[in-house]
Amino acid sequence: MLTLKQSRRLQSLLLGLLAWLVALVLFFPIFWMVLTSFKTEIDAFATPPQFFFMPTLENYLTIQARSDYFHFALNSVVISFGATLLSLLLALPAAYSMAFHETRNTQRLLLWMLSTKMLPAVGVLVPIYLLAKQFELLDSRLLLIAVYTLINLPIVVWMVYTYFKDIPKDILEAARLDGATTYQEIVRVLLPISKGGIASTMLLSLILCWNEAFWSLNLTSSNAAPLTALIASYSSPQGLFWAKLSAVSTLACAPILIFGWISQKQLVRGLSFGAVK
Image 1 (cartoon, rainbow, N blue to C red):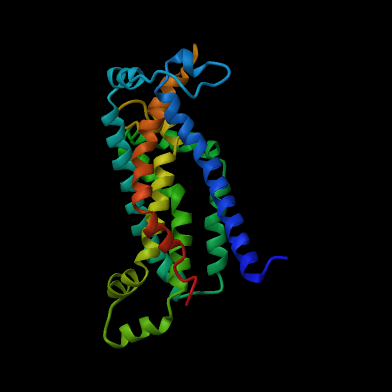
Image 2 (image 1 turned 30 degrees about the vertical axis):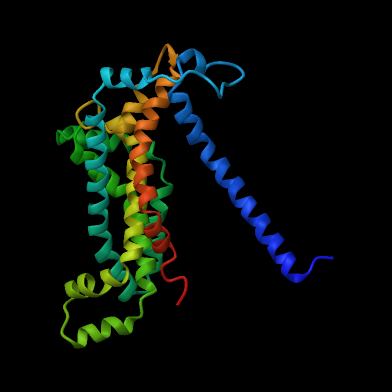
């Protein structure tokens, strides 16, 4: 018969093992992608799959010789950060208004904004493409920044609104008594208090922009093409070259994975903002 202390220790051990199992299952596709990137095409197609092989840098050298990786990476950085900052600039005043000047239609407006995320992207591709062509914006960073901002804005507004709702209104009332303007309330009061939540919102928006592929493939060709377009370029009518595709996918995922790993503490802190009062 186990004692209460032993039972809790066993429960903690089982939960720890379960957490490690889930983590390994989630990490395995990334591990296999990186492993395959160092294989030859023959080894990549081998059956059964090979865990032990002679590693090679041939795929990475081929990618660099065939295409300018840093050009695509720069486009991804500019577009992702540009869309994230623009989304935040638009979301902050909108969330402030709905959180601290709520009306009977506020919840309906939030639900309507979120419902736009359910719209199939292909349903609005033609009008956006024609508008971009009319204004000569096809294959430009500005176009992708605008499109990414629009598709991520509902989520950004919802997240910022949630963080703002957890802030007591008494803090803003005290700021108004001191003569603070609306701009000063947002910049000097709300942002410092909710910086953890704002940071997590920016990280989520950045990841969504970095991973977006549909719009980049349909609205760009070469000049403004991000890393998602570079990955798609390694799919040809002759078939998929798994080793080279894994190598270019590793190069595309590495920057955002490293950035997310470095920022994980801030991300977790932001996602739990307001959970404990």
